[in-house]
Image (tube, rainbow, N blue to C red):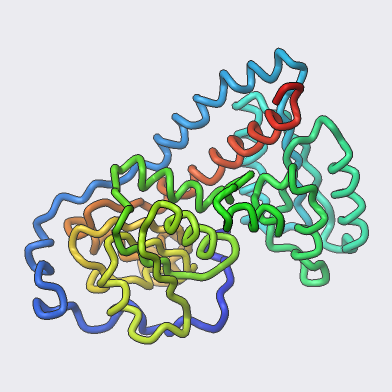
Length: 323
């Protein structure tokens, strides 16, 4: 749940609502209001990726190696239940075997570790995903470390994090991978450009910064203690917002023509649109100013599931004879 990505410290409530950029701050601010913004359709791209997995799944079936994904849900968090159902349905549509394990919130850490160990040894399971967050009495770090690295299709195991950091990724975490695919699909040139990542979580912020660096961007990571956040973001050619704060990044904080990827999924807390989904950026305010932007919903979210399926197929290919 991207809106729930945790950060160190609290983001100031006033960020993104400061004074608008002047011509001195950003010479093209007023001209930008006439710009045509490309809306990046993540749902369509995700459908294309999922459709492209068919031939690979068929090839694996010829080796008696149907890809299998085990998803573990502990507790009854409503949002997590929705995500797990969506993942199971997506597996079925892609021809991937789905093994769902729904456990009560009272499950002990040792019981969960025992289940993970069983799945590690099951040859029919190629990918293991433990839905986060876990109940407070269970250490997510301990559970992630217990997953066999070759089945860690989320890419969170320390071994896989290290491979990513050294440019030899086995599995790229699904949401950061989706961000990069969306930028490529939109034709955004990254080499030599300044990318600002807002958010430093292990799930999105840090890995996406590594991926941008690998594409030769100059990368700045901002967080809750970054002074004058708007001044930093206004320097960016590419903005990746992964904070979990509704519309925290206002249009006045983004320079004209910038590519904006909005990872946030939040519920609007009050007002006439209370309860509706929105991202971390002011989407409406950036239409006509950003060069390209992802919507919420329909941007990064569908890509995350598509790339989870792709990682599962990749894991099955590794495990298959002559894989």
